[in-house]
Image (tube, rainbow, N blue to C red; front, side, top):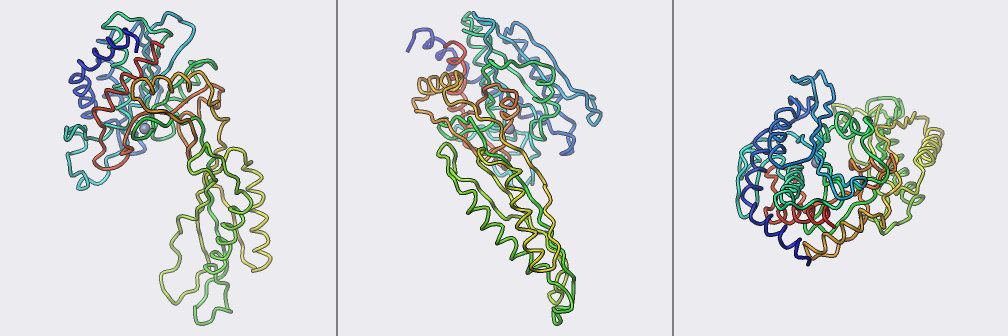
Amino acid sequence: MPMQNQNVFSEIDSMKDEITKTLMELVRIPAISPQNGGDGEMKKAERLQKILETVGFDKIERYDAPDDRVPSGKRPNIVAYAYGENKAERLWIITHLDIVPPGEDKLWTVTKPYEPTIKDGKIYGRGSEDNMHSMVASVFAIKALKKLGIKPKRTVVLAFVADEEQGSVYGIQHLIAQGLFKKDDLIVVPDSGNEDGSFIEISEKSGLWLRVRTTGAQTHASRPHNGLNANRIGMQFALALDKMLHEKYSDKDEYFDPPESTFEPTMKEKNVDAVNIAPGEDVIYFDCRILPKYDLDEILANVQKLALEHEKKTGAHIAIEIVQKSAAPRPTDPKAKIVLMLERAIKQVAGVTPKAGGIGGGTCAAFFRKIGAPAVVWSTIDETAHQPNEYTKIKNLISDTKIYATLATM
Ligand SMILES: [Zn+2]
């Protein structure tokens, strides 16, 4: 290991208490979107900006997005630059300020959501993992370099964005619309990950959510021939649809986990109020996660065709409604520079051999892939995000800080 890295790592180790304290400080300030009943991210952003001002960044900018639904009228986005030896090449680390609501209070058994507590080497609290873990790691990687007077190899840009949990319109999408990103930027969005930091997400499946509404005619269950039982026809169609999708779109791609497309019948809407009523309407939903190689419109055409066949056969009306449809962007190349750099940094610091691959989707890396910029999703976390008793391990927090410092200087 190069001498310089050893110094950086010792510096980061010596800042452990400060790193922990900073994460806990941020957890104490909720930042919930207006859709979820919160007042936005402004308070947390203001606190974070104060912290950033002590780091020694070369430039700190604000790209707030107007939003009347929050008291400040703005959704904050902070962009902090640490100039590198090579100013043209830029490494971005993008983390989000907002959190999801804590959910039921009584499920928080270790501590209250906004009263961070350390127990068994873990920091508990809402947002500790998602996304304060990576936010604080990225900040302290730069702080360590600045303290030692080490200039990053390339310019490192840390972005702290709003609105990730509700679609990124006032966050990442807002920054992209400002023209902030270039196709050859190296982009890390550490918003997902695994236990030992060995998984680098480079692609995602397409998403398709369908509502299948079968309409027959309601009648008394003792005289079914007087109506048309939509429940039976809906079930028969759902099973036929399930079979068709699995048979027709059965290819596997080992880059993904699971390697095949998934088609799951999930939610059912409530129908009648009594056992002795044969329902006139049946509504079932499908959650489909589809390998990027398949064309969503072609799949939809086949779903329609099957629905038409069942309509003819049964006399019921079967409507296929699209609840959500998002075609996966072209994956990040597994040999892209950012993937190879991150693999080296992980190996060097954590001693694990990382693997690049795809997931069921959707991450905010997709926004960057759509504009042709290579983006990866990575972090070392136990995947407790959005759950009660969310936590992050201090050991992983320090290790990820070192990985970012290594990335910045390699
Ligand atoms: Zn997140």
